Length: 178
Image (cartoon, rainbow, N blue to C red; front, side):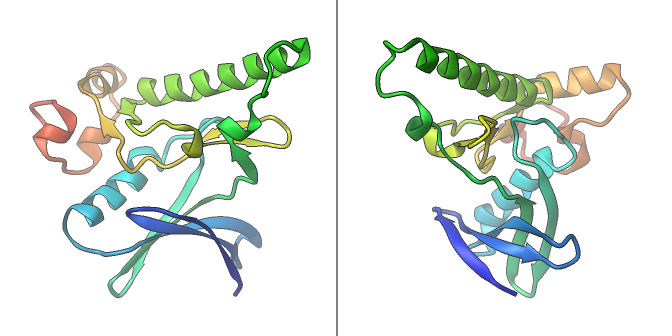
């Protein structure tokens, strides 16, 4: 097994690893300390969007632990942070078209999260990658929270909301049933 460090964060580190079962490169996020609020947030980050698929949100695969170590795997996105992709001058029409396309994808990803009942709360250029093909992908859902609207929408469609799939503290969601 091989790996390469991609990102070091406050709550965990992300590595590029080879998944032998899928025979593919994936991102592996490892929690620094498996205790208290950090473990809660780590699990919430995964569970909040694990079953959700959208082209502008990173796809999460599997949550697992090995002893005291906690990990989850996700789609590997080869890209650059949003601010490094943006044009340095907006006077060139092709740069404006590129900016419009990427901004539209960013808005579609945020809208998809909101429709799923989640608010990112940490949207910044380093949490948004743009691939060489121009695909915009939102990452890092560690501070995301569910909204009361998630329960209302999911009740109408008879599906469980993220709030109902796993226990949460009332203040994280704002819904009295969570």
